[in-house]
Length: 187
Image (tube, rainbow, N blue to C red; front, side, top):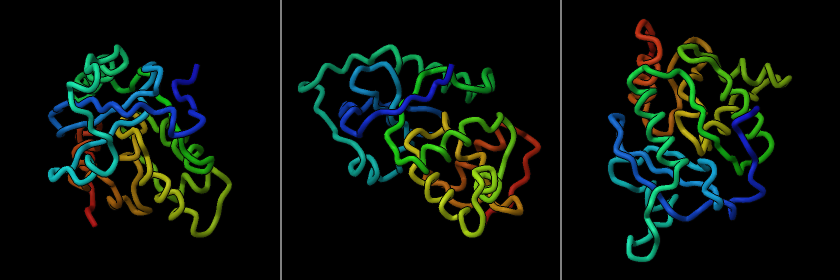
């Protein structure tokens, strides 16, 4: 059974933001409107620019801030992942993205823990040639569910770390968490 579901539109995503202070930094989550799946999971930047841009912030007096079970489950799994107790996530996720992005994210979702692949390998697995690795990178930059769809496991052709919306330092830390012998080349 797949844990990735498609939402018909972004209107199916709740406006309520759930915050989680992890050891990797502040994580912001949203659920689908039915509160049965995670529809967004992002690291907040230190100055919260992305926080204000990507989320509708509700005053706690305006909205019931009780966290749904799917959020509590996700927090538990993030803790277990960061402590190396689990290697994959079982919380249901939902995506509202264009078809090409969905296809790229589906491939990335299946990259095994501790392994890496390249943008060009993903493009090749989709039957694409030429400069499609840039399109893959673009799709990954729009990954609405960090960690669970492990775009940090995608590197440039010769193993260089490139393009991670939440900072190359965080990408490197995640790769080293999963594979302590990982050696990166930061660009």
